[in-house]
Length: 276
Image 1 (spheres, rainbow, N blue to C red):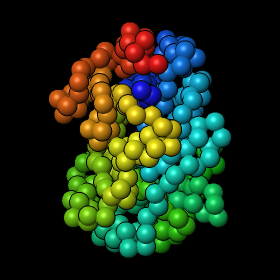
Image 2 (cartoon, rainbow, N blue to C red):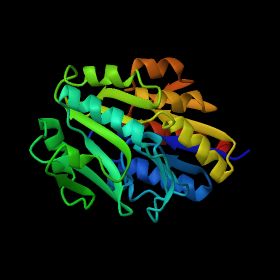
Image 3 (cartoon, rainbow, N blue to C red):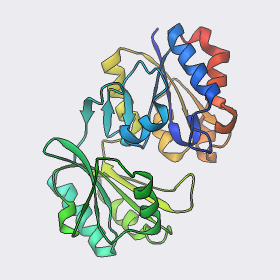
């Protein structure tokens, strides 16, 4: 039986300093060399994730953008991606315009991945996000709201300083069965993020595609947040870190030590003989 280990990043594999500890890096790399199949599933882009995971010796494709995209971490090659159609984009655009919310738009322009935002419309939370991506060649400001909706769009993120600013948008988008939306507080700060994607996009559906691509038939997963619930539901074994939300702990097979105590790496070291 071929087993794959898949972990969330933020709040799970990454510690509260948004880093991989030396212990976790050493443990995972040593286990990969011994033959375990390890990868991650994250809401981050590959660009953002690789800044934090570039020392991991990954041997499987990774799931990014909450499942919208599967990529080869070594080459950046897109293996699968779920873009949106014109009717979905129009619905999102009309809703955002109605409630006065300006998004980050993840799209492909002439085959290049770009992140568009409207210059001058940034919330404090979005400013922090943009500052943290300084030097990222994907980032592309535009001058008007209309200019945001171009190319092959596959993902939207809205960042506001309060939940109330995003709740009307979230409530409206939930009425559209063709869309999947996730609203949650940013794990390391106080602002709120609303992420919008095609209804078929989830870590679970991407995992199903990854299983077919790699030939694995047994999945062990780790997570901490509500966007990991679908991942847990399709895993053969699932483990929440101690710092996870209660709703995830309730469906987990067990709870491991926290992200700051290298919970995932410690569990893997203790159980690796049955993982290869």
